[in-house]
Amino acid sequence: MNPANAQSGAHVTLHRHVFSSDFANELRTGLLIFDANGIAVDCNKAALELLAASRTELVGHNSTAMPLKSIREDGSVLPLNEHASARALSTGQPCYGIIMGIDNSGRSRRWLSVDGYPVIEDGRIQGAIVIFDDVSAMWKQRHALRLLNEVNQIVMLATDEIDPLQHLCEALVKYGPYALAWVGFASSQARGRIDIAFSSGTTDYLREGMASWSKTDNTGHGPVGTALRTGTIQVVNDLDTDQISESWRARARQFDLGSCTAIPFTVAGQVAVLGVYDQHAYTFDETTVQGLESIMRETEFGLAHRQSTNRLAKALDGTLAALGQMIETRDPYTAGHQFHVGTLGAALAAALAIEYGLDPAMVELIRQSGEVHDIGKIAVPSEILTKPGRLSRLEYEMVKRHPQIGYDILSKASLPWPIAEVALQHHERMDGSGYPNGLKGNDIVLPARIVAVADVVEAMTQHRPYREGLGLDRALAEVAAGAGTLFDPDIVACCQSVFDRGFAFAPEPTVELTRVTTE
Image (cartoon, rainbow, N blue to C red; front, side):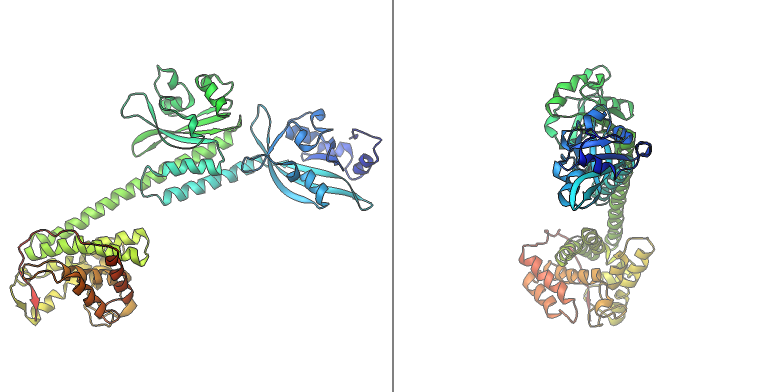
């Protein structure tokens, strides 16, 4: 290689630090040589190819004056002082692994890993050598994996099959970083129309009626409409020139959008399409589109799984309701009691679980446990359940079998933990005086300790045919008196707190009941 100014002493000095020209031009690694003022004085053949530039466009210019748009990973412009050449010249120290994107007209963005080395002679910085490699494929794969991870987190934490799509759009804009992402559905109101459901980014670009999937309407022949109608991915890598985008060209220019892709998918039985837009033309090359398609297929799978999970959860609620109603078919007292404990007591148990700080999934399981914790009474003879007056000791012992019977029933139904365990342990007490196994303290599972308190408070505050409700104050005093001996003191404190903050039972139904007591 020959420097632009062969007579310059600084240039000659720099060339002593560079390999012979034949060797340098055979390298696949790009080389750029800068003088002490940050002006490029030479380059090798690989530099021209990697930067898609001519020698005259590079030599004689500093980094920002070259016809290249250098960007950070977040899409913002890379300032001159962050370029490898400037950092090496200003600090006199090497810098390694600077990741920068290069935008060139008519081609996709290229990602480079750049190192800069100062050239020092006689204690003075004479210039800098910059070397760089194309890491586009690796960067795009890593980027796609990061996006996929973010989307997986969104789907895993979702409680609805549809709402995660808004978070998906936001993730694509935040981590893409793409200019715009939106999801449209085939309208159920107007044939051929695409309804905009979720969006993030340059959302002012969007307007109702701008896209359809109609084969006879011009708005149906754009990338989004075509993707939804045909079920195939569409890519427009230059919105300013591509014929398919002609109807939206002026609007794309207005919002500085350069390229887009549209990916069809199905969610909750509905046909939908994801539109992703970038400010730069030629963004959506094969690797990038494959990454986005993988994200959407994972999203489809995850949302379908969420839909199945929700259906199973509803089926579980139905199963528990059916189990609760089994008692109602045998005995009017138990029917009323099951309504109260299964509905009112379960609601209080859930409130206590929330106050205790348990996560939403466990709160729901505790609510469900409260619905059926007395299911074992189905095996207690109806003569005992309906007997007026006090029970004999033997009869009471038969009633005390219901926790174990309930556990045996529920444990065979493959229900989630702790539903069966709550049925078994809800009459256990902290000092070991409970039944059926005389468990103490933390040997009683937390959900059972919660339901135990809710059970007592519900029973005391609600009206019975043989007595009026004893009142909330008396019920709270009862569990407070048993805190630490009969009941978990932390749960008792939570119970006081939820009522202090306004918790109230729903009105009870009118049911004719028969008293059941023990000696």
